[in-house]
Length: 251
Image 1 (tube, one colour):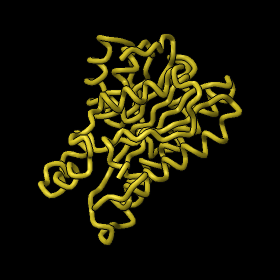
Image 2: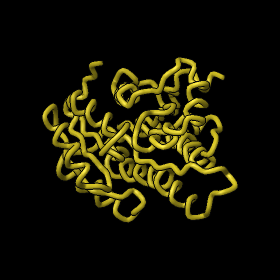
Image 3: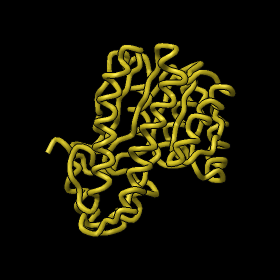
């Protein structure tokens, strides 16, 4: 799929693997200069080398739970790559437990990355680069589990439901600055984060029963939706949540 993102500057969090890395690869292949943000510099450096064979990508170490470090990182990216046109927030984490077994520490771990860190990344890029220039696109990686419930995922569901509502509210607040804010809500993707749940026969059977099209989504399919929403082809789309779920939420 071809998207013309020439001369655009994009930031992707959670960029060293999974959906984030797939977004980096497609954004770079589409002509964007991509700032890769992740907290594991070694894994990110290896991923960046592969991307750099096809396009422009530069690594920036950041743990999105370190809120005080977000603004300086965005400032550095602006200095080195230019003003930010696209932000994709993909950093995420999950802990699989029945709802009655979650601890306060589990809650803080999941919400601090999935929701709090995402919001302050959105805010930093909007304030520094998009509001002053009156333009930009933010795409947040939510989940179908922000739209429906799921077994052993109570806190993850809460965090991704928060992402969806943040996306809608930001779209309302920032429309006056011509900033579009959307989210994608994928079903299960074969990534490191889903590896354990997909290995469990009972959990895998539950998943496959609920995906109408009968298979997992690929990271590349999610990246294609992200790049569409980031492109001029989606110029009149804001405040929406796009399920990429093989029909799960239709049920």
